[in-house]
Image (cartoon, rainbow, N blue to C red; front, side):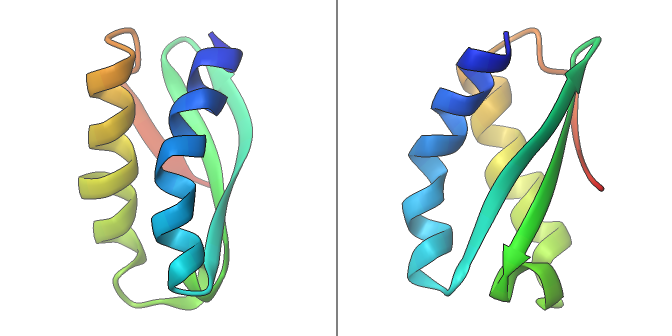
Length: 72
């Protein structure tokens, strides 16, 4: 499942990088994906929105087993 998550993250990564940020996969456990937002995304006040509406939504669509995406 980690490989599937990484592949899905690679699809959203270009949008984050255009804004000076990035996302790093930390862990996948029991359907919970742990990520770290880096660069401009790490300190952006909209990072929660990006995490839930962008990254989590994309991962859930691509991988139904994903229950939640959390930032660590």
